Image (cartoon, rainbow, N blue to C red; front, side):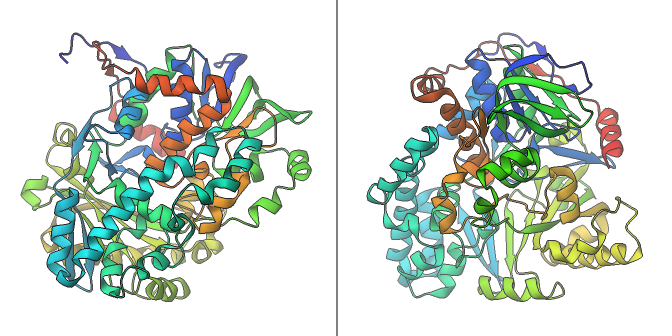
Length: 565
């Protein structure tokens, strides 16, 4: 559809006492994609929503940051199913009102490397099968059955999670019947399912070569989580045009249209509860903001251990819930900037998954017990190569991100210290880790060594600071089979008018958090009004007017980052 005109829109405000209204229909704590989805959908249905983000910018793990003339995403390395007509694309179109655009990655979206041996994941079901069958000609039938199975699991997932949109009491009843409604693989680990299909361990290692996307080795992770990720990328990957930060920028105007707003630097200290009913939040500065309903997008652990009043924690015995759940792995990430364009440096958009060999569980166990052991997984992403708008914003430059798991225990001795003031031991530890990770990149791309212009390493301490986590967890809660049987992970909490959203009420990743936002919105609205959400998706039409998102200048962004650091 032709663009008729453009209008500029605001992308949020910095919080100050007195800048917010006295009363809102809904307050959302945290501006990750789950919370933004809640706020946008409710705004489209006429409700005034206040989103409160303690960070200097909105977006949660979908935000981006600038340093030394470069920009990096912190969590949106690639997203599937949005570069073509799909349910997920329709959801993003609705909450962004068509402002968010996507660029398809190269056909080889992932390259799995086991001890130097390469296996390409190529976009398209048949391409995926044909490529793997070249390496495993005797396993073609297994590969075909595997693809059919992950598609089957994906198609049955709405039945599996249907209870999340229901009132909590109804969800408990529904979930009792769930084993009879979906395939048995929903209740098995990834390794159990795949070893039931083949004895070829190398093939299993390749098929699980994206396990970093959900943070658990195959023997621990639910096959449901694995299947959703694998199916999600089966048709290839995509990246937001304009960078990861454009996700939040494109959604915020939707929230504003019904009188709502997104506030940064808005640190919520406690959810206000009286007579077991939530009615507002108390800010770190002592101010109180009131609303009819509260949604927490701060993560399950943060919500019940930090934001919920002590009296409510004791009343509902929340520690009985946490005993059954596990925080996900922490991580390290190198953010590196290079002089030269992607073309000049010989880079493309293909993600690299590098493993010492195919023993994912064994390698992870060795590394967890000794940080000097070989990295069990190194993931390398090239964000500047994925964004067609990059050269317009950062001409003559390129960026790379290098990610690997880590343990919070390795950094405990420096907890409570300030950035750049943690001492020589900490700096030396980071330098050693950084050198090892950069060497993994230079082994694959030796031409980059002399073009390195800037790099920094984020640790679990960085995650705790920016996400207000306790264990440096990257993906909130782990995805053990038992996790999906816990009734406490329902959007509707035992505290009246208090709801949770995001990946913890569904699954990890941007897509999982997005779906968490949809399901928790339906749960909040109730059985009758919840259908209105489906109506928004069904009746969506591409807008004739395309708002132009007004972005902060680089100097404003950098000043905010320096102040926050």
